[in-house]
Image (spheres, rainbow, N blue to C red):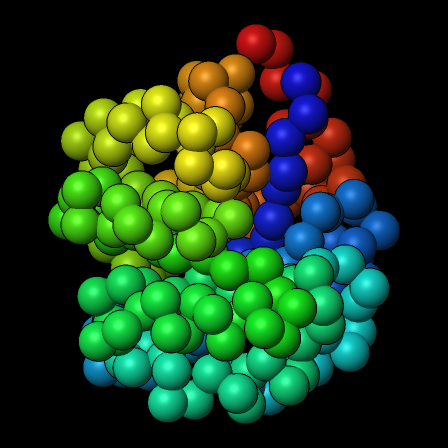
Length: 220
């Protein structure tokens, strides 16, 4: 079964970032997930514009840029100018007064528009945006920090979104506490991709290539 794997780069070793990107690329990662946090929308500061720009210059793989920032429309241009056509940009609908305006700017720049849905955000509140976006990133943990515990009630939300995705023409992605059992359960149901952080990929005592091969060889 084919599914996408993306590396959560906030978990990478920043003392050897160039080598991390190279090793992940050679290991067969599908894309690089970039978490931008402003310390306001979420209670943490994480990756910066310069981190994103460097990783974009160091790889030919797609970038998935996850903007966990307040009012992204005020600054969306400085992110888009450093990305390539076909990269994905996710925003949080709650962070913007008029999220459809920000999504349209992403579309106009030739990027793939996406929304990220927090554990406490209901599907009903983002229903109209599901008709605009091409990707929906479901947060299985509260956003802001790596290494959190999975929130079980998110599973029902994923089931609801899976029932809508074909009619509304979007793909579903998983972010947060992504373990092998979650991939085994949800990839066959239609979740297209999984963001890998400290649960499965980073901080392990084996090469990335071996880890990714093990994940792709999971039995369904």
